[in-house]
Each structure stands twice: as C-alpha cells, then as structure tokens.
Amino acid sequence: NAKSKPLQAKPTSLTSQRRLPNGILLRDILIGTGAPIAPGRRVSLHYTGSLLSSGKVFDKNHSKTHPLVFRQGTGEVIRGLERGLEGMKVGGERVITVPSRLG
Image (cartoon, rainbow, N blue to C red; front, side, top):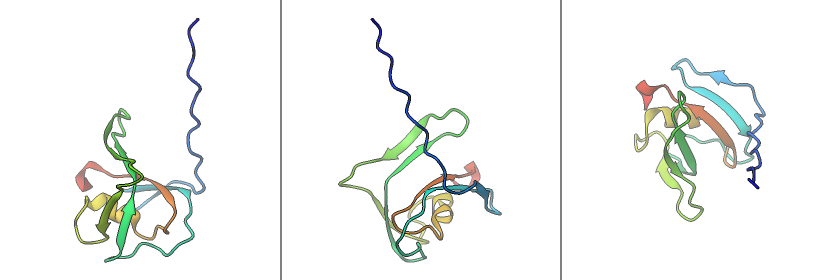
C-alpha cells in the first residue's frame, strides 16, 4: 500500500503580478497592515530563493528565531530584493522574481 502525499495548495495572490521598469516581478500574497518599508528602515524577513527555470531552491531562511535582518537601501542584500521590497507593508507576504542581473 503506497501512501500518496497530499497536494499542497499554491498561495493565492491578492494582486495581479506586476513588472517594475527594472524587470522585477512582484505578486502580493498578503497585504500587510504596518508601515511601508522605506530606505534606512530595519527589515526582518523569512525567504526562500529558488530558480525560476527549475524551481530549485538555492537559499532559504525560515527560522522563526533567526530571520534575515538588514537595513533597507544600504546594499546589505542583493539589489533585486531591496527593490522588490520597496513599498511593501510590514506583515505582508510577497513573491519577488528577480532578474539575474540584479541578483
């Protein structure tokens, strides 16, 4: 008797996908209720980095006790992530697709 794994539902987007002029694609899954992320503000987040072509995960941080922490706009993380987070509200969840040239 082989057991089948239940299918995991894909997140449903609250907004349509939009493309920024630099090629970054954004899709909000959950709109936060806090203040928007702004340059110089301390950001704390959990993420999964995967390749668009294959879905292969190359990096992730889902530790509830140790999220990635950085100051927005200071170059501490890849440019594509910083640009993709601009305007996102605290408590939100967003899918950010970053072109390789901004990674």
